[in-house]
Length: 251
Ligand code: NAI
Image 1 (cartoon, helix red, strand yellow):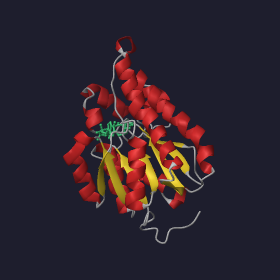
Image 2 (cartoon, helix red, strand yellow):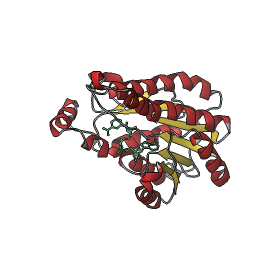
Image 3 (spheres, helix red, strand yellow):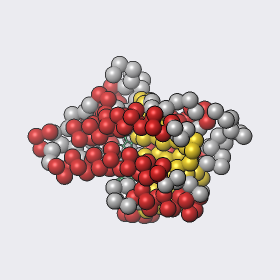
Image 4 (tube, rainbow, N blue to C red):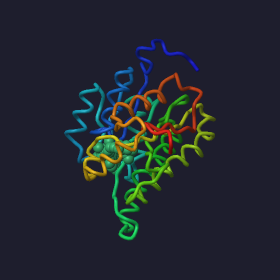
């Protein structure tokens, strides 16, 4: 590993893409990576417009309208990165959705939407960026999984399967990307208060919080700091790993 010029700004000179950066965990990841010195490309669906622009302004980065499930998403992102920045050093696949239903009521549309955004898109985009040289040698890939992909969660067969799949793909991809000195790791958050979890009934939310052995829900910054560590020179020798940010040791 090469130590950064400054540990105050360990990502100085690096270009980082964060998907789903308009709000929630992704917006905080963008802030923390920028704090650490990275130039941030904040990406989100076109409909995120104003919120995405706010994130980009806040972190002094640029906003990119990008639906990660679009068939040309990887090509579009690669072209943007190569033209504007000569490539990226870090990509954080944070964009994610839920379409919760008990299994009996889980239709194909809900399965396909969740698997498409949470599992297929991150891998396809990583593949295209690497193939086109838009993710530089020595780069970092960080995928956002979930405790639901490790422990399961009622009504979330599609979501849990997608997030378990992310762990599988991180492990399978690590030795391949290692040939280019690129690491790939995952963070698996527990319950974090965002717009995504605001839709969950209060009693269930309280249950999620209290399940934590630390007796508290995590905050977006807890996830973001772990992502920042995976992106930093401090974790150069770490790949194919999953870190749970959920205050739980028993699962
Ligand atoms: P959120 O719903 O607040 O934010 C998700 C962002 O992703 C939104 O800005 C949305 O527009 C964007 N997005 C959705 N589909 C997209 C697409 N096709 N292309 C580009 N962007 C898209 O959710 P939150 O809570 O911030 O979640 C972020 C990540 O963390 C997700 O992957 C989620 O599954 C994961 N996570 C969240 C937990 C929580 O408790 N909030 C727990 C574990 C994991």
